Picture 1 (cartoon, rainbow, N blue to C red):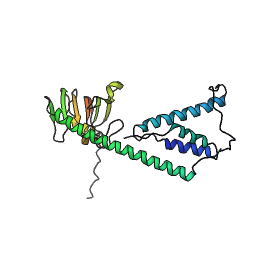
Picture 2 (picture 1 turned 135 degrees about the horizontal axis):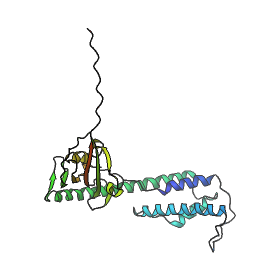
Picture 3 (picture 1 turned 90 degrees about the horizontal axis):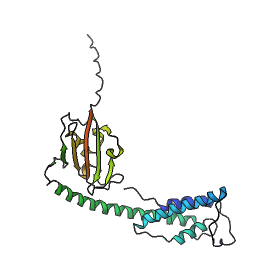
Picture 4 (picture 1 turned 120 degrees about the horizontal axis):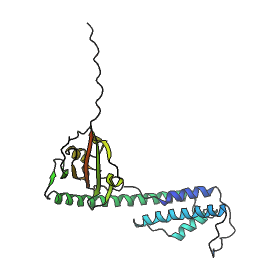
Amino acid sequence: MKKLLQVSLLASAVLVGLSGCKEEQASAPAAVEAAPELTSFEAKSAYAIGLSMGRYIGSTLEKQQELGVELDNETILRGVKDGFTDKGQMSDEEIQTALTAYDEHINGLIETQAQEQAATTLAEGKTFLEENAKRDGVKVTESGLQYEVLTEGEGAKPAAEDVVTVHYTGTLVDGTTFDSSVERGEPASFPLNQVIPGWTEGVQLMSVGSKYKLFIPADLGYGESGAGSIPGNAVLVFEVELLDIKAAEQPEAVAEAPTAE
């Protein structure tokens, strides 16, 4: 699972950048009644930096609120303002300690959430495969791969070492599409032995011109870790059409050395 962007990284960068230009300020700036006019190069640059930083922090905190972590916006702003002065309430060592603890806390929550999601996905996938195996037309191989023949072709079947050209659409069991050569409008070609085991096994069952639906258990897919938008322990459903096969190139024969008489 991808790690959520961590605001502490941004905070560290901001504080490091500000530490070289700290200046004592006589008093806090007065409240702004109206937005300043952004007419000069300097004004536009300054506002763009502040706005992008604020949006980045805001979107990051919003994601982390889903983990149950809520930070007070006013306290964050006070810390940013204090970063321009020598009046910060924490030393550099205390800042680093707090940010490190924050990262560890967030990472722990992410890991816990990922484990809980993986356990739920595993249970849902098991139920799905058990029910799916009962449907007419669904066959189950020894490895646990399930497949359904939508169209049976009459061409050759590939070997694992061959390069195949296919059109496919991959979905989760809830119907969410995570990848599709059909949507891209361009078929994909790759060596069959360099993809997930469920593909390597399933496509070898197909003849050119065939269209199958493959139901791939997690252990034949991306396993506990998942990949990209695919959660850990996810059952994958692929609708695959085998368009062409290119046999693997054979190494050139090496002539035998002549024997001494």
